[in-house]
Image (cartoon, rainbow, N blue to C red; front, side, top):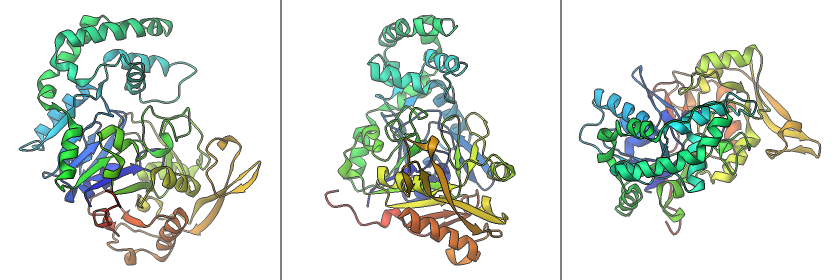
Length: 430
């Protein structure tokens, strides 16, 4: 077993940072394959908190090379800031941190357009980090890739073409169009910390897998935010499902051995869009406060709700999940009862499927379970209170996915590893 994908099975914020950090204890390489600085992963080790937006969560493991793949969009300023912080903490000594020269560059006008759009009636709740407009440029074939940092003339020419395209949009939104010189001068401030790290990361990933090294592919956001499979149009601009690891990292599907889906013991969502199990009461606020459900990038409070099992089953299908990692079970401790959505009532009748294109008319069908006491001291499934164990068993049974990992607290040590994804038999043809 050499290649494992870690992917969010909800609307993002499932705790990927902690889970990736745990699994990278055995990984030789960690690769982020999609998204940009809109995906903040919070790592807590020994009470020390670190938030990374671009760099893979595996950066805390000295043995793991960390790569930013070509499917990402990268803000050079954010990347440079993260590199400086990691250097300050001594986390970049004698190790590889590499960036794809084919990844697209987020530039100031992308951030400007994103911000202006979010001030209007058509706002969908983005992080205003320029991710969507950058992916628009990529699809329109006027994007500027990170490799342009090696060539000032190429960078300038690309910026002029892109600005000519964006100028009418910026003006129509009431903004001022930046000058090409201004944009280029801003970006070139970060050449020193970035250019030496640029390479063909796809080739490096292929070499690692061919050599039998363990490679972990780290997703961003979650399956329900995927541009093709999510709750469109309230989605991200990239492929957030497991299949995105192939295009975003530059490897074929036969190279992937296992896929682990992350889900909280409840559900959260940031920004606009349908959320059938949302709690807009004191229980929802309690979960938000206990779970620290505030965006690590924006600080915005996350919407909270009960766990949605039909959505989890949908995520299992579109990702091809081999198992789940269930996080934040401890946040639900102390509630007198816990509810979980097991089906939906729709105009066509009751269904166990996730009615993703008709959520506005779908009504959750809940199962209610008794609550439980503290779980943060549990170090095995047998240590859990009976009610908590029954809840976990229900999630596993109804999702159709075996349990790989259970998180019972924010720290790395508060984790029960039920199954090791590196020990799954290699896929046929892999």
